[in-house]
Image (cartoon, rainbow, N blue to C red):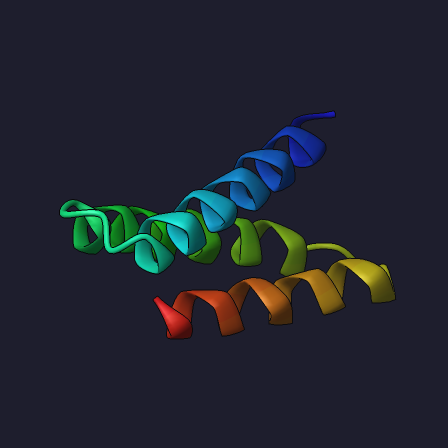
Length: 68
């Protein structure tokens, strides 16, 4: 349950970041920095799992963090 909540927060943070950048929100840079931190934290948690889907999630989170 804790992992699912972290993943949900990460998902919403990524959406917020995308919207902020697309709309040229003045605070987009700060939002992207926070998104990067959230994604890296989620990736670290997902990597602890032996499940293939969780490994894929970790990679997607790391890719998103790089994009930020």
